[in-house]
Amino acid sequence: MHADERITENFTLQELIASDIATRNSLDNTPGEGEVQHLRRLTVDILQWIRDKLDSPVIVTSGYRSRDVNAMAGGDRHSAHIDGRAADIKVFGLRPGDVALWMASSKIPFDKLILEFGAWCHVQVPKYGRAPRCATYTAVKLEGRTVYLEGLRPQVFR
Image (cartoon, rainbow, N blue to C red; front, top):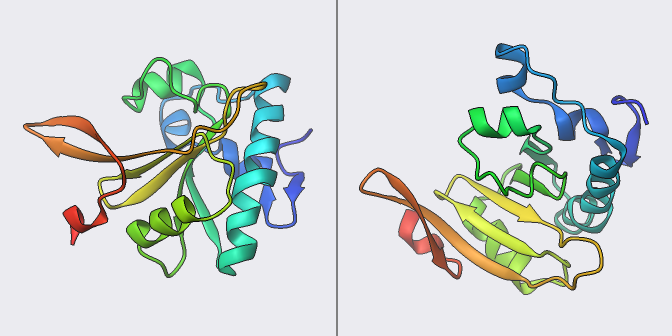
């Protein structure tokens, strides 16, 4: 699959692998076929579903990350971004907290949903062969470090 090819009506592979960090640091952020398969599943099962149901553009701020890109982004070494199972998103015209609450109450088969700092939603699909856990968290900064609180707490950011 070429980066400019469409995965679904509204998403291309390119927007799921684009990385300012990779570009600025001359890092390769090309996924392998296994990662592309995960990105397809993420896009078909979650991203396009959100786009269709909310009838608003979904902006992917971070999708696939190579290990080097993930390290430079400060991501966890076991991040689902590394194998193409996660995307950080914003939905045009909607507050991230409202999107997160809507996603949690919908039938989207996500494995993990994190409302991150009230600024975007991290959503991921489960590993192949595993059922979606539908786990929800809220990421906040406490004393300079990121802490993940169980559940969605958009009121923290209002």
